[in-house]
Image (cartoon, rainbow, N blue to C red; front, side, top):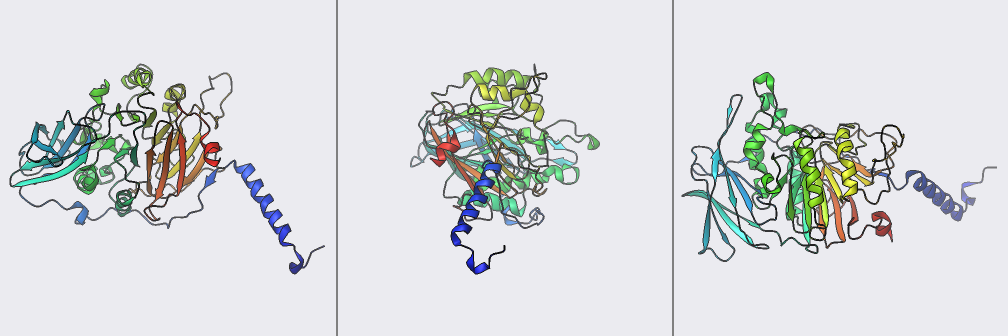
Length: 473
């Protein structure tokens, strides 16, 4: 019998809705595919005459200024910049805040390169060493009368309970959406102190003949952030720039000339994989597009590197790479699988807290997941989505580049996938102490303070409880 609409009890409606919700929760196991739908529109590169690409005034003015960490412990900074008309000086003058009269000088070096018909400007790199922790420094580059002055703040001493905040950006490019992402990061009230960048910088290779002028415009675009706080570089596929059809057969040529890394400080043999310590974090950068099979330099280095991590000194172990290992989008599906097979058992053994990747132009956060039991003959091939010794895997390749969003997902959503959304944005990680860190993902379309996804991380060494259960309790 069909009841008249007016006689359906509100209580029965509540019971029905509650039953539907519980049923959905049971079958979804907490997995979320965001219902937010970003407007379908192509990401367009900003015009070359945009103000964000403006060349600074003055003859031979230093441009494209950027900094990164220059040693293993955070007491050195590599300052890089470009002059166009002539080499000029590779010297950096620097001083502590309120101590302008007591200044220091460091000498650098200059290099150039050619790529097809492009000739670079004069690229300067200078390492400032023996800096004091937790100190604001001003630095000046260029030759009078055309000098430019910037500043940075050194990290606190390495230690287990030192608060520190990282930003995360990947696959940025130089589109209007890229500008929104960078602006969103700059205006976020959770102020990042350094950016962990997961690869794919300029997307110059998306232009005819890998137009290297787009490396110049990109560096001028991001200068407003990276001249003031270090960006820690990971290489992506768009840094390879291998183009034998135009005679360019040296992989990573533009990147290696422009963006130095402190790889020798961690006994690496190449600038694409290395480690640094920064505050309470030990950060390992891996190279998805350099050989990583057994006996290769990267494999040997990582095998020796992981046992060196002292979690009593740097409790938070973070890995950066480009091609994600756990990815439920149809884009670049399983491209990171061979690297996962090689290295995932080590990540579980050494209790890596979190792994950040790019490559897929969307956002996704996993549960703590591992798939290390399989040994060819035992058939144990299902990922274990509640392995409390395993990392959380986060794909943050949503910077806004010219290739646009990855908006096609595999269905059903895998059990290990906690949250996914095809939108542009960035992330922040506020490390509070040795046990707790607050993570948030910020969608470009929201207000600067809004977190579209968030969670509390609990350190795998000091407090290895279930993150989700602890967050809900």
